[in-house]
Amino acid sequence: MSDATTSKKGKKEAWEWIKALAIAVALAFFIRTFLFAPFIVEGESMETTLHNAERLVVNKAIYFLSTPKRGDIIVFHAEADKDYIKRVIAVAGETVEVRDDVLYINGEKTDEPYLAEKRAEAKAEGEPVLTNDFGPITIPDHEIFVMGDNRRNSKDSRMIGPVDIKTVVGRAEFVFWPYGAVRLTH
Image 1 (cartoon, rainbow, N blue to C red):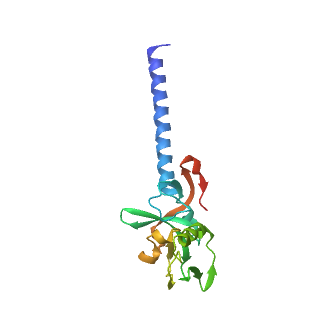
Image 2 (image 1 turned 60 degrees about the vertical axis):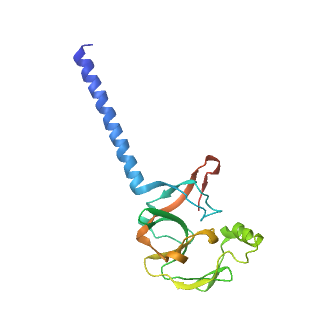
Image 3 (image 1 turned 45 degrees about the horizontal axis):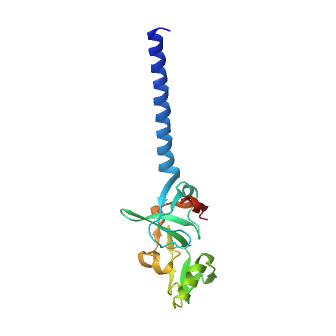
């Protein structure tokens, strides 16, 4: 084989590698920007469902096709430099209220089985209720009402008001770290 042939083959192979890398970077950028993103849980506001420092995947594409639903765990831009993760409690047009530690949506009692462990903790600590009374609050168009599952330790719509749907990043899909805690979030 001549040096010219070897040089041509080397250049062709280098060009193929450059194209493959460029495609991989473009795909990673597209997936990260429009489809899925990693998120790190900061704080205890979603315990016992999610725990501090867990890493999860957020589906960013789902709300291009639909709007958040009651019960979805979502990530949203709460402040200019901070995202929150909370559970959707009520959507636009619904009225939300808590009386005697019971959630009411449009006047109907709503079960919250994901609060059982935190309710038991509150009672064991001598606290008669997990969620203090509030409302009724009717959720405006294009907004949602969110709360953390750890009601005694959550900055949520009770303090910051309903959340504009435009600020929603996506829905939490599954925890991928720590390895032993891998699970779906919905």
